[in-house]
Image (cartoon, rainbow, N blue to C red; front, side, top):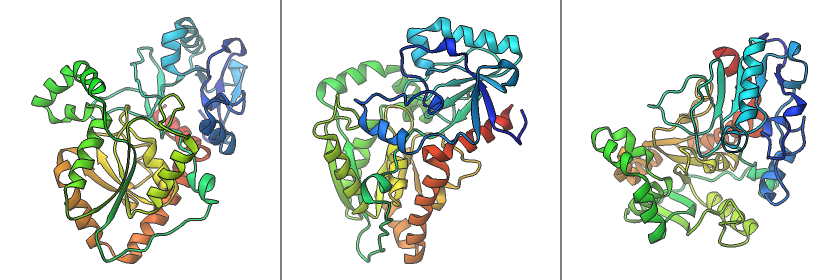
Length: 358
């Protein structure tokens, strides 16, 4: 694989199906997101992947890798024959296979010489061929704020910590979750790392409860009873909910970032897009592009085992930094999003990681 030319992915046109193909194939194929998923469609239309760093071919002789054109979980559920065909073609050509494994549910990949894109996972659970990438997050500064960075000045009072989103379960949801997670709870008794695998909204509940009960911070809170990123679960107009989220972030010194169903959070990158400093509750998360990105330049990271000390950590951090450093971190947050995490910036890092591993 030469480093002086774009990465070339082989995709047979006969592999096209009716399902939603991987976004890496846009714009080579059409926008994979339906009109019903309004925000995601807008996002990919505004900032598609950078095709100067990679391309797609139907000539196997020109290819560096074979690419399975649909998400791994979709192939496992709907078309295992296509996944097997992609693997067979790659092995016959002596090429690596690239699989899009981005999503909340991760299933292992057993085929040799395979590399898989992931957004979640845990640091203590190894996976050969894993390429850690960010989830797709829209540029909310451009989308909602006209692209104008709104710096916040460090005040003399308590640090303001913002959160807007799904933050509690119903009794029935809590019961279903309790039934699904017995092995996690048992393992967590003997190895604290496994406690990180508990459902993300439970960690949000705990973090918010700790912050609410502390005199050290001021909590700017908009709790919701359901996930707001889908029309199927949002408890109101999605544009109004997004505007409420943006307003909460911009009116806060720091913004709470806790994992979702996967061990990652789109929220982290949305906060960065708005130029605010995230307070990340680290549940053994794998961070994308960590070899080239210093997260401490724009983020306060607190281990999940120290959740009870969350207010103290925030207050101490806020007291320790100068007003100039406070504003610098906001600039760093925005720059990190644009240069590394926005969709149009990701492929150069993904291609570099693939070249390094292969």
